[in-house]
Image (cartoon, rainbow, N blue to C red; front, side, top):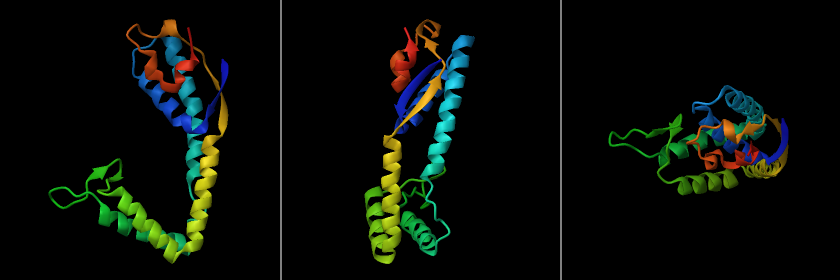
Length: 164
């Protein structure tokens, strides 16, 4: 076991890298270490995802913003030949994300300036949170346990976790 310190914004990248490794045919000891490390990162990811939620979703101005956001998103949605929105990752793609953000931001500043201030403060706090570090106990992974064809670069930030 080793204790590592990483930025919280690096947690999803590390989790994804370990997920890629988990798809390889691994020796049992390494498969165990990868699974344990992913579980530890997954717990941190869940906490970070919960922290991203805006806390006051029952406010009337938030509900108005949510309805307007959906209208504007529909307006800027990428459309297929059939005129329907192009689906992507459980939602849909925007044809012009910049124009979408600008229109939504302009509406928010005009219609609900306090909510805009609250959103900005929420974003500032999230940036601060994601720039901070977290210590995680990881299971050691030995380079000799990886398949020969494995390229350590595939580990991304996790490459430093391998004992040579």
